Amino acid sequence: MESYEYYPIRIFTPNMELPFAGHPTVGTAHLLAELGMAMRDRPLTLDAGPLVVAYDKNLTRFTVAAPIHIQTSTLKK
Image (cartoon, rainbow, N blue to C red; front, side):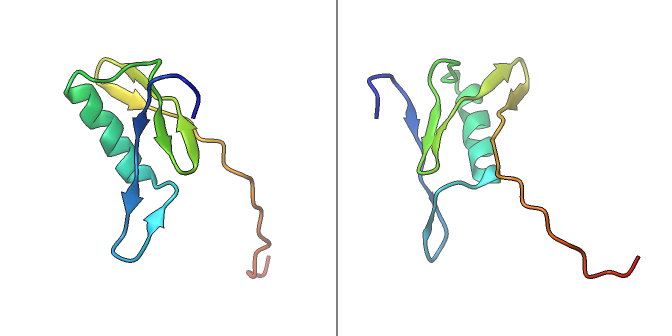
């Protein structure tokens, strides 16, 4: 990891560790904001990589770049 401060986040299910999961990540970001620990220059760092969170009053948000996967439909037109 580079030499900046960050919040390490690990997410577990009963059977395995996940590199990323949306709801636990949003909850963690919201909790940090509620505790007054949210900082724009301190990303959440998951196994999937660092995640910069934007905090604005009562709104906590982040954007993830997900690969686009287009499936063909099995439905008839």
